[in-house]
Image (tube, rainbow, N blue to C red; front, side, top):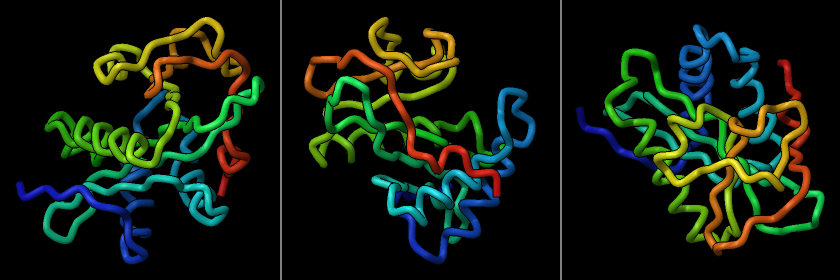
Length: 168
């Protein structure tokens, strides 16, 4: 394996969609619209970070990061996801490498912090934790987690970009 993590390029877009479909195909908690979300974020100019994991010329993973709003007005917060790795490539540290690279890039850009919706057992290892004052409506608190780059956590309701409602 000769894995490289880099920014997405225009020629990666079809492969990113295919990776995303494959990665979420068997996920029972998936809306199976993740590929549409990534595309809608891209078209809306809301992909702050889009990194791909590439082996030779093949995209095997991708992570998307986009701005979120917090009802308190806290600025500089982003949402990580979706993050996708081809099923045959999972369990090899590719998702972890994408996560670390995305978080590093956010810090370089001066972000205040990042939120993620997902399995606490997975995201805790990157420093994400649930915070009682930070809420995503309709989601159990344990599954909505945050990581602050500046030590402080905002309080309020988090809203993702409307692209997260994309269905095609």
